[in-house]
Image (cartoon, rainbow, N blue to C red; front, side, top):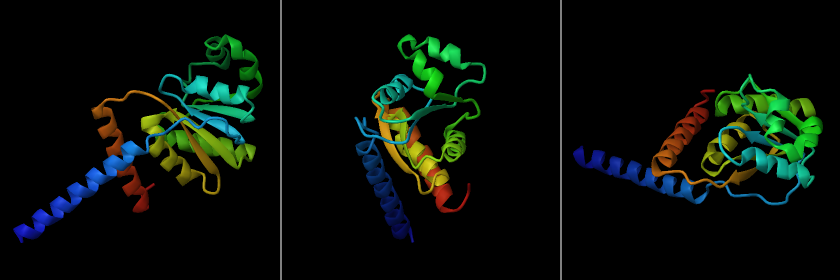
Length: 179
């Protein structure tokens, strides 16, 4: 009995370690020039909005959603932080004010994508956040191509462990049908 328990714990620890190694190996990478219908930027980290604007400037996407913007921030205020891109903000950038976390980012993005009829999106978020963000978006946007465009960051070990555990919990919940 104790031997079986030990073997089970060893198997679980090995599976966890292999999964964590795969998680680290598959951190989101920059996508480069690759056209999609739209670009979705999840707020919360440096360089994300700039990356989305670069995509619009290259005309690799028609429109951009910035999901999870503080409700007090108006388009003009956000555009003021990017003076060279004010024209892009006027024509091609939508601000989503409803999302407060990754799951609600996916819900907000899902409504926006369906409203515009997009079939492919480029997801811009931090490299460490990409796996869980794509998981949530795939759950909401079945049939839509989602390409990850990770913004490089330098997360610490604690951040990576926390994100890996969030990913595992959410993936488990979705596998069990808990939405």
